Amino acid sequence: MQHRSLLSTCLLFTSAIFLTVSCSNPGASNKPATDSASPAPSASSVATTDVKANVRMGFSAWPGYFPWQVSQEQKIFEANKAVVDLKWFDGYLDSISALNAGKLDTNNQTLGDTVASVAGGADLVVVMTNDNSTGNDKVIVNKSIKSVADLKGKKVAAEEGTVDHFLLLQGLKKAGMTAKDIKFVPLETGKAAAAFAAGQVDAVAVFAPFTTQALKLPGSRELFSSKDFPGAISDHLVFTRKFVNEHPEKVQAIVDSWFATLDYIKANPDAANKIMVKRAGVSDVDYKEYAQGTKIFTVEENLKALQAGNDMNSLPYAAAKMSEFLSEAGFAKTKPDLTKIFDDRFVKAYAAKTKK
Image (cartoon, rainbow, N blue to C red; front, side, top):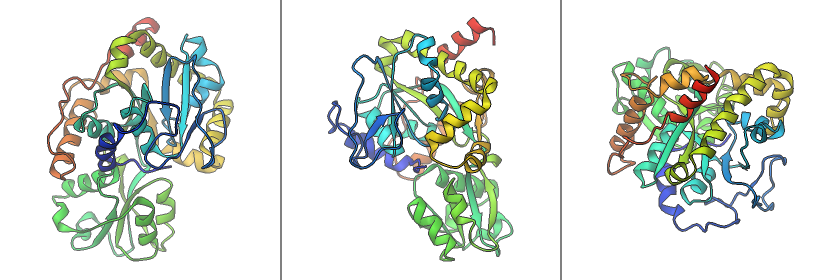
């Protein structure tokens, strides 16, 4: 599972305007997107676009995104009169780059990355919540650290600007500490996990599956995780505002398809899990472990999350906190306008017609 980076997203929007809006490979790393019915693509594979499709959707490796594979293979899109070109991305950041470049109409991505894109000038709309990370993002420590207070003066690694960096700062704040109380070591997520496992740093903030790698250090343990900070790391279906304005009926069809897919998964868990495990490219055991750290949102939970509130369970509140984080960390020069970033009418319409 590729890292989800707030800092990289800010930079990606700037670079995205130089990308062509054609069928060429998306993203700065040139990793291709492929039809999601195909196995994970090789470096030499070529992206294809279904000219009959009228909604171009991107998704990547995260448990909260895999249900879309079920939507496609079980023809749930078709049942809801949605024609979708579902694009799989090896690199999560590549999918964000493609959305910002106009190569996608919608993408599955974190709230933090959406706020970062808006700060960079993108005009995006969150129409639905896929999930919350409820344990897949962790701060892991060596055996000498017994509490958050023990992190003072210690070397703590994380990829700067990522949602896990944000999680680390939330944990420090809760304990009455700040980033100045630790020796922050900025490393790419995989390298951070490796450095911790090698005993080169005292703690690390990473997401699954790099958590598994970090925990190989004898005596290491989880200090806290996203489970302790509900709403801190959430994932969403995000459209360009242009598409929402021009094709609201198509947006509705996609939202309807998502909730119909969740109903299918609940009624057919074995068949659905087989599809999602294959798309994830992991073992049944690993997938179940990662899935347990992800809370898929129901219709009711979506409606509640989209309301204004005073804690991270409220998306407007969480978005404001993400904006503050980006500004304070120097990743965004100005705070983005978040007044129009959420549009709950599609979830409300689904709830009304299904009486959920």
